[in-house]
Amino acid sequence: MDHPIRNLGGKLAFWSFLTFQMGEKMHSIGIDIGGTKMAGALVDDAGNILSELKVPSPIDDSDQMIEAIGSLISALGEGQQVAAVGVAAAGFMSADREIMYHSPNIAAWRNEPLKKRIETKTKLPVLLENDANAAGWAEFRFGAGAGSNSMIMLTIGTGVGGAIISDGILLKGGFGIGGELGHAVLNPGGKQCGCGQRGCVESYCSGTALLKAARELASSGDAKAARLKELMLATGELSGEQLYQAISEDDSAANELISELGQNLGTAIASIYVPLLDPELVVIGGGVSAVGDRLLAPIRSSFERLIPAKGYRPELKIIKAKFLNQAGLIGAADLARHSVS
Ligand SMILES: [Zn+2]
Image: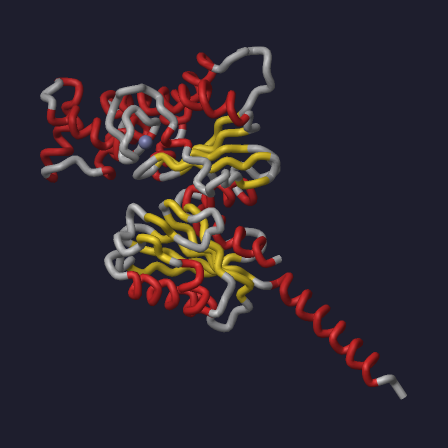
């Protein structure tokens, strides 16, 4: 007859083996919180999105925000084995990723104990991460940066987000707020930036700065901006979609603006980011990267003109991101999975 303790030990070993096997097949959930909508996705361990949902962000009420996040998670996790949940959002968060100190897009999130609140609501392990970091991690693991060891990502959207992966590690910094590449100063005393300083990369290279410059040009009466003005007059105010349309039509004024943005970004990459971080590649993502080579070509030409020790250093690549709007979801889900494995 088997010894009862030994027998029990065998059963425990069997169960932990089974749990481990099941754990390997578990999915994770990524949530990307925006100022108008939040998106959620069930993601497998290869970074594939299995299902995706979006709901409005009730940004003025923190209880409703938690309710909305909880409802997304329960809908996505229905009938699934979920290992963990990753939540990506713009904002300054504590180094231990427990507290969202200040989120620019979510008025209700000031000193919000976000991790604990979502964990209490969902009974799942939660990982909180800056949205640009999550996007950079997705590109590093499954996208344009797959196979690299050190890369940076610049997300050109409403602002200019940054993520640094060095020797395979997502850099967070001493206080958890590292990687803010958009706030390197390109032009001291220059254009006002949302961070309170002047002349940051973000104040010249964000989608917001691009649209502002296009609107100014369209209203200036300058003959070269005739197409931009025509588009503007059709709706009253030039929209991002109309500017994208003008760029796609190869309108020279619109292309000049995107080229200027690219040259400024190339300057920052060559003179600040690369000398400091020595990445193997620079990934350009975010909404503005949808214009492709119209943005990448001026970035590369300005980079090649300004890189120190030109011609006597290994060549790094500057490439477009693989994931446009889903990078935050995929990266948050993968970081969450890693945090519990
Ligand atoms: Zn700034």
